[in-house]
Length: 67
Image 1 (cartoon, one colour):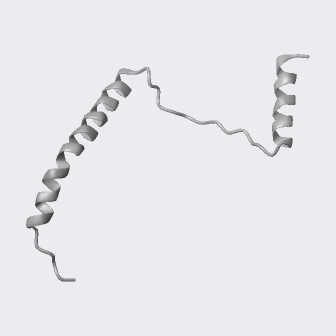
Image 2 (tube, one colour):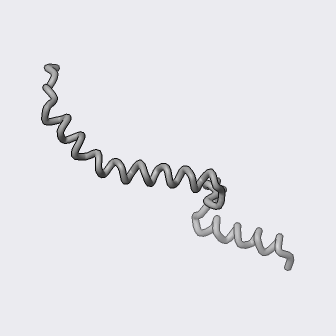
Image 3 (spheres, one colour):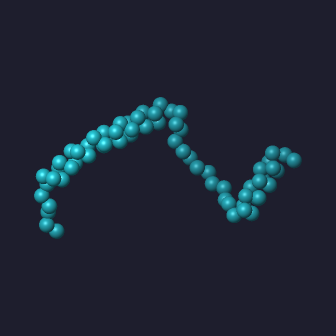
């Protein structure tokens, strides 16, 4: 049996089990661009933890606006 036939049989069996095949594109984690963006986001998350105190201060001194 050829590879093509085995793949076709496998797909039929999976469909019979109530599943369907999908194709998905995901970021390529091997690229420099991905590494730079991941680092930027990690630094932003780390900084956000420190910014909580600043936001608490802002909320304490802010005046509520009537609706």
